Every structure is written in C-alpha cells, then in structure tokens.
Image (cartoon, rainbow, N blue to C red; front, side, top):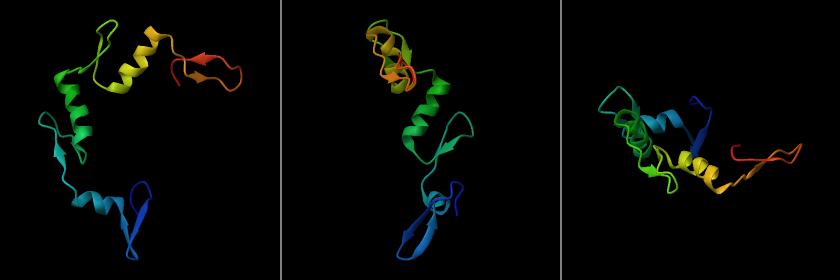
Length: 95
C-alpha cells in the first residue's frame, strides 16, 4: 500500500501509487533539492526562486505566481462573493 493508501488493480495485480511513482520521470529543481513527478508542479515551484508572477490583475496590475490567487484577488475589484455561510447566509469572497 502507498502512503495515501490507494491501490490500482491491473490484471489482478495490486500496484501502489508509490510503485507507479518510482517508474515515472522526476523533475529536479535547478536551485534546490526539490523534485516532482509533474512538470506543472515544478514550474510553480521554480517561481518561488525566480519571483516570476505571470498572472497580472487587469485592474491594479498586481502580479501573482498562481492563477488561483489572481482569481481570488479579482473578487476584490468585481465584488463577487461566491461563498455563502450555510448558517447565516452571508456571502464571502474566500471559502
């Protein structure tokens, strides 16, 4: 069993995520010891070193390393409050 306890069944053979992961290509950060199996995760990690902020707010030009953070920020300008409290019904920008 892998660390998260998930198994895949392939032709009646149990293969854990850990076994699958060891056969995948690891991406190594050129600036530190961090590794990842996913190239998109590695790109996000490298931005911690470079300071790159490719996602810009069209209202105030504030930059963000991740698109999800830009989306949350944009709610300040648009007034969008998509999350509501199930008890009082009040709406909020953040979940």
